Image 1: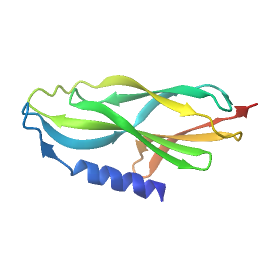
Image 2: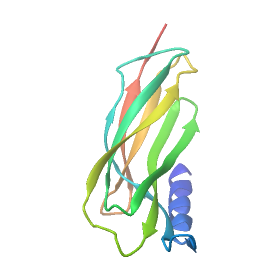
Image 3: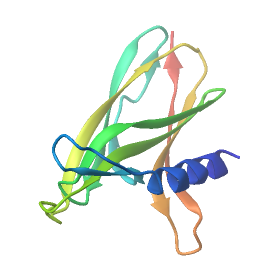
Length: 137
């Protein structure tokens, strides 16, 4: 079900567009990009907030970080990076690693399972980097 919600969101986002009249820049929509790496603690403490560093590759300077796709299912968290895409004549196709921070508050005593979206395989199946983080007292 989560996979379909992610795919529907990406599909709708890709076909949503508008023109920004103030500077001539065209907004093409949003795109979900694969996560390359994650830096997070080996364990959490209940009630604490942690900064999780997430790195992804931005294909060009026309991509700008917008937000995270963040789905909660019990103690399982599915995370993906969403970028806004602006199309104009100055787009430079120069892939660049970008690191963004997800603030995560620990509100359970149970182990968390994080699923970080890493794109899809040749068959179109979503791939995830899985990280289990226990919670200490």
